[in-house]
Length: 540
Image (cartoon, rainbow, N blue to C red; front, side):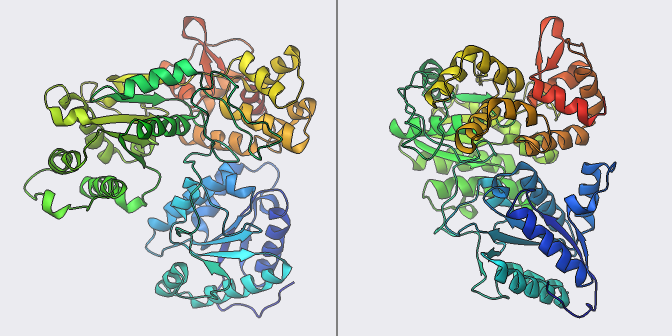
C-alpha cells in the first residue's frame, strides 16, 4: 500500500466505479490508499451502511466531494449509473466558484482507441484522462493525485485538467479526432448501435452471430421504415419521434438521416446533450451555438457576426440566419435531426422561446418556399414536464412516429437466430419479465449469448440491483425520486391488477416506459421487472 506523510490539508474523494472487477478491486485499492494518506474517501460499497437510503447518500457525497475519481473500464463506460454520477459531478463543477469537484478519469484497461459514447464524451470533454494497466500504475496515479491535492490552487487545478500539468505518459486528451465517437447518444446498447439493412422486413438482414462480434438488433419492419422515409421527403416536414428512455429514438433518427444522404439531401444531427452547461445560460448564446454547429456540419463558415443584428431578438436573428444564409447556401433540402430535446426542459427559459421557434419554421413552409427546404426530425421522451402554449408547441403538429414494442414473434425469431433454440413458453417467460422493451430484450439476449447466462438465472437476478439491469433500475429510481413519483409508483406495483391514478402522473410514468395503459385509463407496470424491483425497493 502507498504510504505518504500526513497531508497539509484533507480532501474528500468520491470514487465512481462498477461493482465488478477490475473496477471493484482497484476502487478498494484507491479507497484504502486515500484514507491511509489522511483524506476522506467515499466508495458506495464500503461507505453506505445497511438501511441507509442509497440515492440520497450518493447525492450528498457528490455535493461534498473535492475530487471525483472516475474508474473507466469496459463495463463502467456503458454503466448508466456511472454516467449519471459523471453528469452530476460535471454539473456541480460547472456551477461552483471553486471549480469542484475536480474530475479525475482513469481508463482501467481501456485502450485510448476505445471510444466513449456521446454521454461520457460530452461530460468529459477537454478533461484529461489517466491510464491504468497494472498495479504499478496505482502508485504513480496516487502520487500524482496527492500532488494535485497539495497544489490546492484553483488556477493550477484548471491547468491540470487541461493537461498543462502532469506526466504526459500517463494521460491523453479526451477530445481527439484520433479516437472516433461511438454512434450512440443515450445508453441504448452496451455494444453500440449498428446499421440495419434497409430491405430487412424482420430479421432477414441480421448477420450470423458467429461471424459478427456485435449482436445486431431489429427495431422496425420495412413498413415502419417506409412510413418514416415517405414523411421526411415532404417539403417542410416535421417528424416527432417520441418514445421512453432507451427505446431506440437515436437509432431511428440515424436511419432517417442515412436515408436522407442516399436521397442527396444535406443532413445534420444536433444532440442537446453535447454542449456544456454555459451554453444554456442565455437564449442568445444557445442560438449562437445552435446555428454555428449546423453551419460547421454543413462545412460552411459560421458568419454569425454578419447575420446577427443587435436590434433584433435572438429568435428573429436565428430565423434570419436560416432564411438568408444557411438554407440559400445549400442546393438541396436539409434534414435537421434534433436528438434528446428533453434536455431543454431543464432550461425552461430557453425551451419556452426555442420550441415555439421550431413550430414557426414548420409553419413558414406553407407560405415561404425557402422553408420547404427544411425537414425537422425531433426525438424526445416527454413533453409534459414543461408548460407550453399548445398553439406554439411543436409537439402537436407534423407527423408523430410512435416506436412500437417488440412483439413475441420478433423476440422468438431473434432468439432462434441467435441459436438459443427457445420454444414459445421460454419466449413468453422472457417477455413477462421485460415486456417488449427493445433495450431490455437486447440486454437479456446479449447476456445469454455472450456470457452463458441461462434463462432461469436471468429471470432470478433480473429484478435485483446485482443483476444485469441494476444500473437501469437504479437510474429509474433516481428519476422517480427527483420528480416526486415514488409514492404513485408504489400504488401501481402494490397490486397485480391495473389501477387508476392521477392522469398527469400516469402520463409521466408512461413516458418513462415504466407503465402501460389498460382499459378505462388504468395503468399497470410495463413488465414484471419493474413490478418486482419497485416492490422490493419500496419495502412492500
